[in-house]
Amino acid sequence: MTDEKITYDDIKNYEKLFTLAPSFLLERWAKKNTNMVSKFESRVQDQLHKLNDGNKRKLDLILNSPVEDLQAIMADAYEKSNKKQYKILANPKYMEFIELNLDEIRKMV
Image (cartoon, rainbow, N blue to C red; front, side, top):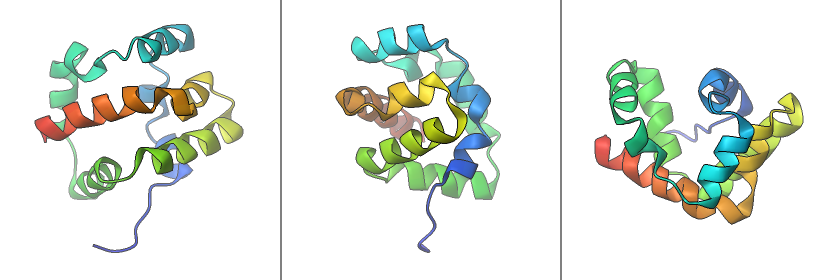
């Protein structure tokens, strides 16, 4: 694989997904370490089936990236967009929430 990295531009393409849940709900779910993938399993499966090869490579990069790296991208996205959802996802205390949900996606893939 190349040295391809996930960037803010990649995140920006999916901003609607990241901001689908109001920030107060996202934070509540993150605090409770909620398995969001299982809550929206059919929607996630549907989206996975629609991925083109480029998007599959990006997903693979995400699934194989350390959570710290992903949270750094979320922090950058928050700085550039001021979307509170990114700030929540960048918070180190929610690493377990992110890892849990990434694991659930890995099982589906």
